[in-house]
Amino acid sequence: MLGASDTSGYLSAERGDDHMKLATLALAAILFGGGEVAVRAMHEVHSTHTRVVVENGAVMWKVRLFSDDLEKGLRAYARRPTFALDRDPKADSLFTAYFNAKVSVSADGRALKASLVQQGVDKDPVGGTVHWYLLQFDAGRAPTRLSVRNTLLAELFPNQANIVVLLSMPGEKRHSLYFGDGDMAAQTVELRR
Image (cartoon, rainbow, N blue to C red; front, top):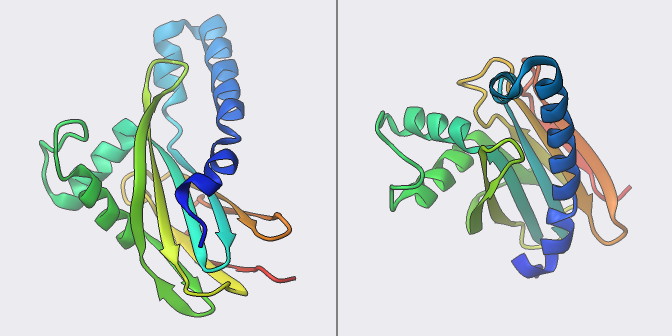
């Protein structure tokens, strides 16, 4: 079975690229609109970015979310207006429950439930924070078909975009899924073609 450390290289490989894109956007915003405007304007975009590795019976899912968006989502989900990610000892279990309510993954028609493996916080280039979570779905055996639906934070933000990049092992076959623009329907990926 694939463990968290086995995927760390792949799941973090695009972190530098993401930061470079964000830094470039921030620089452009600063040049054309001032630093304070840059931070506000950049976060009018609401998105999550997910890297998934499917190997044998394990589906490893690493998702990155803007911390302020996530906190708003968890406040609404838990109906706790004073919830704070950095101060609540049950934040991880609340996120896991929210994640399982908003993300569905089925392997060969069988619904799977995620369990949290690891979490962390990164600073983004313009001073905000990004929370990341590594979760694992146990399919039992290598699936031939995966059905995914990702509606994280879509209940709060009409322009929410959830991007999922899936790598099927062996062979490192890539699949890209986009959930946004009002279309949050499940998408199915054939893993053995």
